Image (cartoon, rainbow, N blue to C red; front, side, top):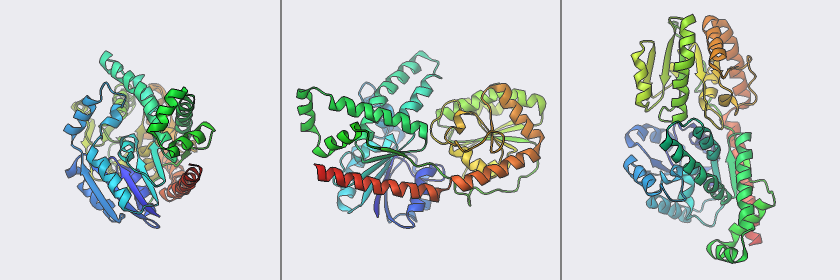
Length: 436
């Protein structure tokens, strides 16, 4: 197949889902990539890594200043800020031009920030990788907001996203997502949207029919009738890359890894440091805590005033930091889909202590066999302390964890699932065209 792959960021070893899909799909298919660049200097290496898997690449710069202007302009519009962030007419025009000239078999677009870039594309099957249900994520984040302004903005964003996300997803022949819970919620939102459209009064319906093609109306009919529209394509792990490494013996270390510009990661780290870490230090005084990830905010950087805490910022390779850990923690209080950071640590045979939210997307993982699960400070600190004091228990847990992700969470298997969704998308598109 000839695949047009559109993403609102550069696929990389941090943006692992599109990177590994492209890597696996390139073994059997020809891929043309269109990506937005948020930081050209930082993404140059990633561009070099992905280039070898693509027949053609188009990269467009999206500066932070432009993104902020986009958000301000859309603040009181029906478009959520999550989507407005990447609005760029020149990018949408490029996608439409490349699609029209490329004789592609399918278009694949990732994330709510990328979906609107494909609005000008016609005449081919299109699949939307939602990754997570963003409405669900925003609802979780809202419950943790404290300031009045933050809550007001959060409610506005959630209100807009509920209809926007459903409308966007309904416009594609097929939607994929990472977890069962997210599938159920997004599927419900889509069906609710389709039902509302089909029950529109006749004058409004005539107006709508003048604005949309017959193909879209047929798609809405299928959605309303309950046709399966959303499928699960789980994340995976590159087991050869994230393989066990020798652990350098030193003081016992706790490690958290993740992009630190992502607010749920910041919330999780701060909560762990304030509520769990003091209980751990009381029992293991020489313990250290390393926070690995790019763009940490000031609230995270200030933690280095504690001599036992290290904040790395961006690192080109997180494996040595994971390898240095006696325990890896993922105490997420906000989260949807699958936490890649958990799968990567498990693949490296590391014992992981996670919150319930952090392991919802890994239903195969059994507590105390593949990982240790705890939510409140006392039980979480107890689990961390137990693993810090008993390295052998951690090694056993880590061996079981790696075996699980090798068996169930490979990128090769995920790409096979995605290929099946591609074929379903083509079939749906052809049937809709015949019915039009």
